[in-house]
Amino acid sequence: MAFNRRDFIKKSSLLGLTGLASSLIGKEQLHKLEEVSAEMGGEATFVLPALTYPYNALEPFIDAKTMEIHHGKHHQTYVDKLNSAISANPIEKDLINLFKNVSKADVAIRNNGGGHYNHSLFWQLLQPNMNASPNFPSGKINEAIVAQFGSFDNFKKEFSEKALKHFGSGWCWLIVSIDDNKLHITSTPNQDNPLMDVVSERGKIVLALDVWEHAYYLKYQNKRAEYITNWWNVVNWKKANELFEK
Ligand code: MN
Image (cartoon, rainbow, N blue to C red; front, side, top):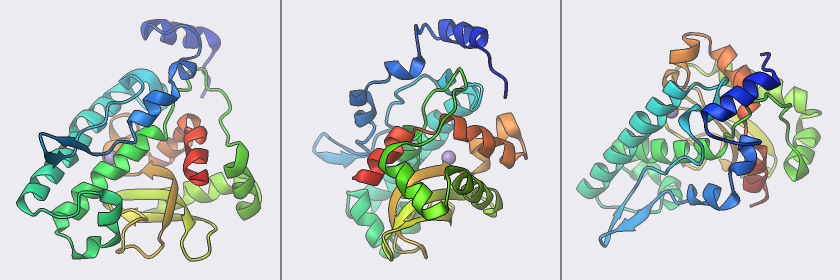
């Protein structure tokens, strides 16, 4: 997609930003998002994490309206339903621990716990790219991708295909598999994720792509392939590398 410097400057001033939008997003702000739960009034309550960028910051690749509804409505609903499921059925409050035995949990906990966790991660793995700069990984994650898939382009092709072919709602992931400690591309239905004991391929999450229609329908309608192609422009590879090295 052509996106020239003038468009970028115009867009930046609309946002009230000077210089590169991405440079304004500090590390501390990103870390805030890692808090997927907070203790409130002595009772564990999950909260919607604030985004570290405005809703229109991912334009032209992901539109402001989609972000507003996706974060403000869909993610908020997972948080609300998770809180009510937890209060009706008090169990493990640490989601990562909970996912290890999620097969024993109520389906509302599995769906909404996954919904909250997956989206919290997804927002962190996105970053503005208003001048459409070439976007590719560097550091350890890049080395591992090249070692496993031959090249970044091969990896992109394989990941895109997996995301495109996933039937119905779900997520596409890049993980470090618990079986062989190597990078694998996998997809899960609904709000399941690779940390859960209900999925066939488990591992540490490095990259996440939401392929629910609510993630792209307003802008792309049925064209999931186009959404995936454009999503590569706003992947936060620094964050992915951080998750990989953790
Ligand atoms: Mn979603």
